[in-house]
Amino acid sequence: MLMRSTSTLLAALLAASLFSGCNKEKAPAAGATATTPTPTAASGEPSPDTVVATYGDGQKITFGDLNDRIKDQLSNLDKQKQQLRKQGLEGLVVERLVQAEAKKRNLTEEQLIKAEVDDKIPQPPEAELKKMYEEAKERLPPGTTYEQVKPQIVDFLSGSKKQERAREFFAELKKNANVQLTLPEPPRERKTVAATGAAKGPENAPITIVEFSDFQCPYCSRANESVEQVLKAYPNQVRLVFRHFPLDFHQQAPKASEAALCAQDQGKFWEMHDKLFANQKALEVPALKGYAKELSLDTGKFDKCLDSGEKGSIVQADLAEGKKVGVNGTPAFFINGILLSGAQPFDEFKSVIDAELQAKK
Image (cartoon, rainbow, N blue to C red; front, side, top):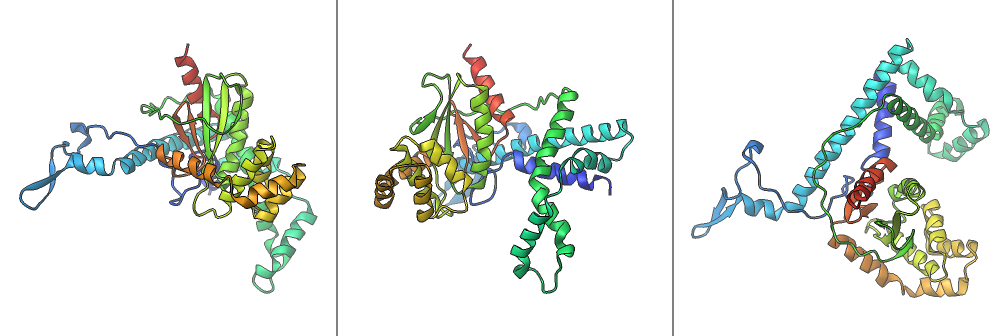
């Protein structure tokens, strides 16, 4: 099937780059509460004063009452619809470009993807393949040989590199074709979010990004690449403020946040921040204390700070602030109060930042 490889790569690309985050429902993080707009006649919805239920002695519930009751959920649905449209548009554009490029080179789409993606990723060393096989052998069906599972191991170890190369190739195609996405954006809601916490960037920067994050969330770790790109691209225009939002199903995240705050007392918040994200599968208290030692912190002060739980109140205050402004998944970024949720690519940040900078001229 010619499109199988292309579609698989597209799915991986889009899933990894658009609207990904940690939350209970495994769905795009909900945005901040918004006032439900009055439906138009064209929407096919009842008018706000339409009675949708009665009870008691002539008491009524209107369609407007119902919308007000579920306005958060409706707002989230609107955001998901826009996100799906953007994701679908991105996929459609890339599919068309791949088809055109394959035709131009007199190749099938599968051959094009193989040449530009698969063939440009070196196979992992044999020693690494065998090591993974030995580590997984006990969990494999009895009698499973190395040669039988080698292709799957290669795919597993090469997968992320192939996704990255696919992103690069698709970006090249879009650049060469001068792709301009003109899908209309709905009005962006702006929230007032306190920029309190560890920060990078000039204090008087015209753009402030407040990030709510969870050290155990893999999407938060993935988002760091985009955030670093933003800081490099806008060194004088952007200030980043980090706030803590450990999700309740990430049991080690609260203590990891406390560890970062204890490190902040010794001037090494960002060093600990990077260390925690680099070691997301090892966030137990002994490991946290080990990271403090690796960072040459005063371990006596750090251990006392961590064991006392004295930073827990700061973490809880950040959680409360995040919930107040509509955060229910991580990472969540407020760019001058405008919500951008999930592990977004650099271009998503850029579109909001450039619009904000233009508005300030």
